Length: 297
Image 1 (cartoon, rainbow, N blue to C red):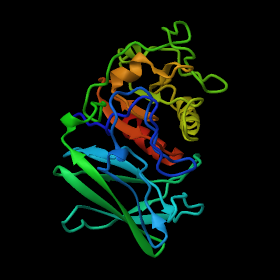
Image 2 (image 1 turned 30 degrees about the vertical axis):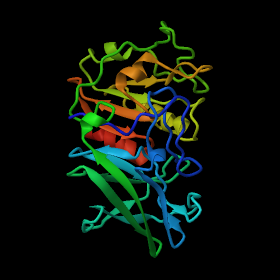
Image 3 (image 1 turned 180 degrees about the vertical axis):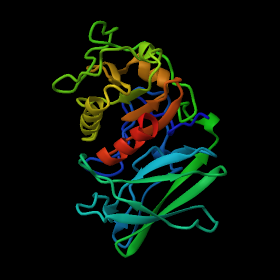
């Protein structure tokens, strides 16, 4: 099953829905314009001083499990400095009864912005409400569910991982720089296509610490480097930069091949080359460890 993560964003377009470390970033140079600015998605509905900023691309696929990192903000859109330990979230089609609320714990271990990972699915196309209860009040946002064929085809759980040649320390393959972390990270020894033939799991992170418009891209790479040290004998870890040329913000070929219109994105691939998990836009130390454990043990 192939799922997209949202509409294509026009060149040099940036969607931001919140402040601080957790905002929505769309990659530069990703095709025709679209998204929250079209008016199809409520990006920030407030109620009694609480709001739910849009921290993911607004359009989601029908009948595909999705992970949506929710955040909490005040009535003016500023992320809460002391968010609650948990929230209750209910999802329902606009005009229909909401589903049973579920409790979601706060995640913020090792990253600058707290989030609440909602795992859900939308069983039909249309407008859907996501209603959050926290701190004695509630707020909501509305998103659109569309057939997956109408969304960018980013590899999801159950899909084969795209096999593509990627830059290495020995061959930059026209990408400069191959890593914008300081110092350059050590996850550029092996091209992705080669890693997928090694007969072991592969963990791939797409992020650009230097050019990212938010503060999350560097911290999630740091968390992955911790795991790469701890699990070096269990999987191949690969970091991919977003841009071919940082000065011109031209997408690297691998990013285009993956169909990505946002970053960061983490893919956990089994030894058979099939994607097991994907974490979009943010993750913390706890969620990363849990996600990797499902495949690596």
